Length: 438
Ligand code: UDX
Image 1 (tube, rainbow, N blue to C red):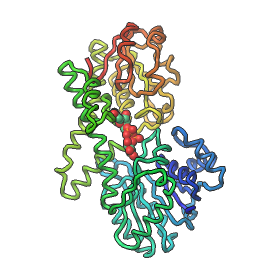
Image 2 (cartoon, rainbow, N blue to C red; image 1 turned 60 degrees about the vertical axis):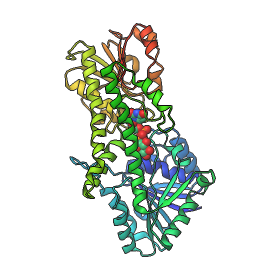
Image 3 (cartoon, helix red, strand yellow; image 1 turned 90 degrees about the vertical axis):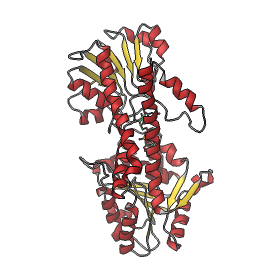
Image 4 (spheres, rainbow, N blue to C red; image 1 turned 180 degrees about the vertical axis):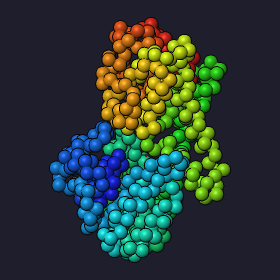
């Protein structure tokens, strides 16, 4: 059993804290947001994440997990995970490191010899080296290492308990070896399950995370670029994805064409990566990411254009039903959500838009107070002249086109995620169109 502190209890930290307690460790989670700490302490997740409430309840029940707003409570822990956010800076591409700096600063007075500070946040390469100096300055017997987190929202619990790999970035020498031994103790159960663990230097470990996210974003934008080609040439992007995906050097995963990527990670990570490359004097190495970003943003514009086309050239006053507000299913996260950005654009251009989502309405409403929301799919569809499916929640994918036909004014559907069964919808009398398909 290791005594652990987790600084920052958002999407990453809350899940990490609960999972570490589940693995048998004694964990204190620290966050500055009082309401968040209150909810977590009651076993309630402040955001929608399947499996997290159950895990919190069981971990709190063992007495091994607690949450607090008092940073001093991290004293006594020997491994401190830094799990705060690194959002995009307002009006800039670079990451805002204020929270990471504050988190490490809050630990400095508490550190004892032998303590290991473990960065998990996604940071520009070079950040860890800077923070390591501060840690070393405050407590020469403590060490800072990097251990990036690859969890996906919606699958965060499984990804934390059973990751594809563990990556440790540690300094050379004895302190580095000590940190590896401590992390091995923390992750003993995961390692025993056969999870591969890679030990490298601190710079590489920071890069692994942004490189992985850049690759995933590139893969999505690649298939969305192919979708543009398909639209122009009368080809079908889902057929193309299936066919090229069968080459196991390519792989079918992350080749789903549609509205593109959003969320709190991929968009801001590729931008911060480009900004960092510029600072390092190698901006040319990542100019392709500018294109990845541009292709991604173009999909949203295309969706709005397609809606206008479908409605005969004008969307002014036209009733459009939007299914989906979150950036992807199984999440209530609306950060940089393609679905909401399309909805807002349509509304701005004068359409009468109603948006629904199984989990994200409250968050969406806070961010876009001028948009109209409905809790119920039926209310959303009633009287619609056009239906847009913008997030592939299972309940939308499995809608019966015959059943819902009676609700709408016109049977027109645009599938922004290539998730509906086109034949079934056409057979029920709907005009079905999707991005990248005939
Ligand atoms: C991502 C990484 O996957 C994860 O490893 C990292 O730790 C954090 O960032 P996440 O943001 O939760 O995770 O979502 P992800 O499942 O990667 O999806 C990102 C976006 O890409 C979503 O908007 C999704 O709809 C979109 N996407 C994904 C596609 O458009 N097509 C695909 O084929 C796959």
